[in-house]
Length: 76
Image 1 (tube, one colour):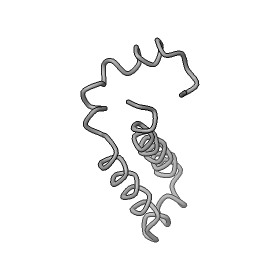
Image 2 (cartoon, rainbow, N blue to C red):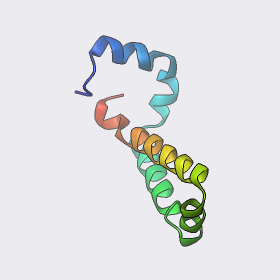
Image 3 (cartoon, one colour):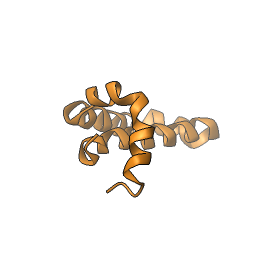
Image 4 (cartoon, one colour):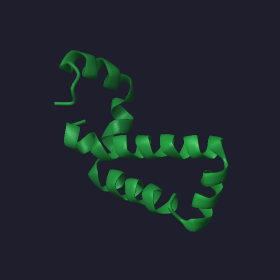
């Protein structure tokens, strides 16, 4: 379902299984929305539009929060 073999997914997830179980649907949805709204505030947008390091960091935060958001869908 996620595009990688099941055995590889199990190996990758095993060390983080406890944490991943706690980041289920409600927490994932709320955190994703908080990150999305918080990073689109005008003051934050001004900062990341003028600083490449902050811009890169926010992209990393968006990708991580989206990954957490999709964990329940992947059954993790």
